[in-house]
Length: 160
Length: 160
DNA sequence: TCTGAAATCTCTCTAGC
DNA sequence: GCTAGAGAGATTTCAGA
Image (tube, chains in turn orange, brown, yellow, purple):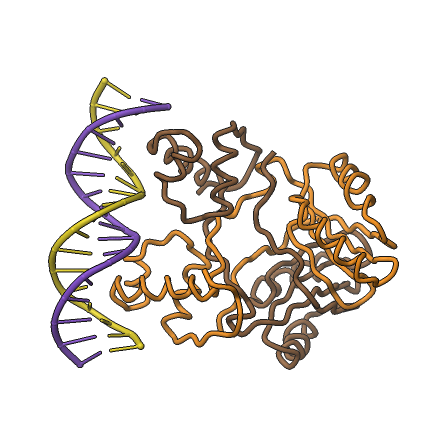
């Protein structure tokens, strides 16, 4: 897979391939080809090209957190003391190491970063804060919002 | 696939299967079996059982938004006027219809809901607000935080 | 440069132990 | 849990639009 760079031109076939593969990542090539109205060979070449260009980052199994002992999740707003570049780089590098942090975004607004943390229970979350997040230099504010209910959790990017 | 219900017991083999399939959703059964040290048939039965029990929700291709014309994303905090059940149900049903809303959580804290929206550009975001979000009844406050940078975006739930 | 048909090779999935 | 094998699917080759 190449590095993600500039936008790619997608025709109608590519769009339908992406839409289907985002919903059914393990559909067979034959069935995919039939649904989009191409031969299996042509369809297969397009899927490979989409992987090669980085449009398809990867394929993944999506796991239900509550069934593997990680039923608690939180959205954590983090502000750094100063917007010094060292703090930021250090913060981001450490966040990348923490598997319970599934998503981390630098955002506009009051917080500098918003994290989504998926974890076992409150005791584990307490340890995450004390042993990981609070040990980072330059943290000014941390605000934890716990997820009461999951309304929607989708990975499919709208195509067109 | 069955409905997600109670937690499942995972032995070491299942854990390794899940870890690998979360990273490489299209690894062949033969290679998966080899990496975890089981015969292909035994491995295959475990994968099917994990799908059947709902631990594996589904497989998906993960697409790079910036390469398919959706480079802008926002975290949107929404508060409803009253916590009347009708408002909440209506809000959630409408949110489920909007493909640009990839994630939506009911949370503790100041906001009632936090949304992650992936979209084309600011003009499209403006339309999303005016034509979709602001047309919902009972919205009290909406605060949009735009994503400046994607530090981490992971789908893999930590196993054990 | 794109397509589809066909040949071939590999893997999936069932059966049986 | 394992091995084996038929059938299904993935991948390559080749020729045509």
